[in-house]
Image (cartoon, rainbow, N blue to C red; front, side):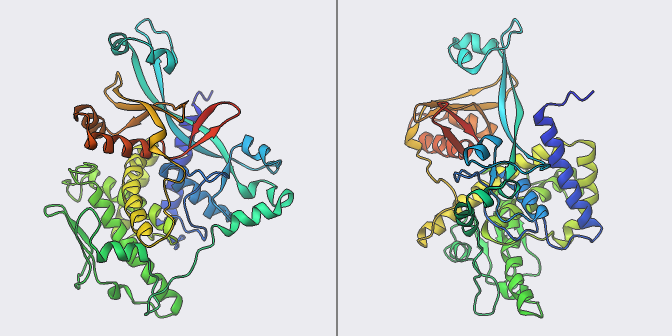
Length: 422
């Protein structure tokens, strides 16, 4: 008898997808990279709301494996609202999010609204446990929208066309990243103008060292040379991902040695973060040759403990968000549309509260435009900082940043007067 929750089934599904990709890489049957798709951008629902990075990686992977034309995913209800239907025999993909289970000292389950009305003393006596929930979505191509509304379908597909951008040598170029490097506007220095034998992030001085872009130009064909440019940027993104883990940033403890398990986990976090961002920007992230040695270990851990993927993706979420927000600043400076914060107005967040759960984790809750949002687990260091800071600009800035991170994707259902987090 299977007593697993939808959230547990979703974790198993994600672990299986990652194991499958790693085994393909190990056997040499997969040459395209972590995702390997031809469709780029952040997965989103049909109204344009983006899914979180944990979900984004696996939805993009699903899009690539199945050969879908867009990373647009819909719930069954959203399909119906488009007056379309899910094609017979199609299998859904899970989307996960965190929720809270709250019990009184007597063991009675109560909802968040009742919990919020309790005194602080009674709240401390409650057992608050975070857990993963899931719901199912279908890709746009798993529906018959193309047949029932071809104009809308074509309009959506057109949004995900990937423009070709080359530098004078024929290598792929990314203007937002180039601007960031040239103006040194990443969170730490990036040295990219001198010849370097191997890319690395030096934790002791908080600096990134990258070979010159021309050192990546080794292809023999125009197509290979173009992809060499992608390899340059994805390599920088890998090192940028490492730098997000510094103690004064996301604090992932980067002092582990090469042969230690935490070192291998950090490499996986950096690889998947770079793969996430690369896919958003319009190219794929190939696995680094020196990381191929980790494949057996990663596969073994995932098979023994599928929940390992949750810990990894939590770190990937935070690192991806930090990088993409800095890239958005460059895009705005270039007069381009940012990837994130579409329609999110922090002024509409009210009744904001940060609190510590019974098991020691920190969570945040708020309302948006008068609608209640579900509580969300936040990073421990962030939670502690918010509670310690005195009221002022620094505290407001940190709270707004946290709100954007945890509530960056939601859909307001006006008919049912609620908000669903994506």
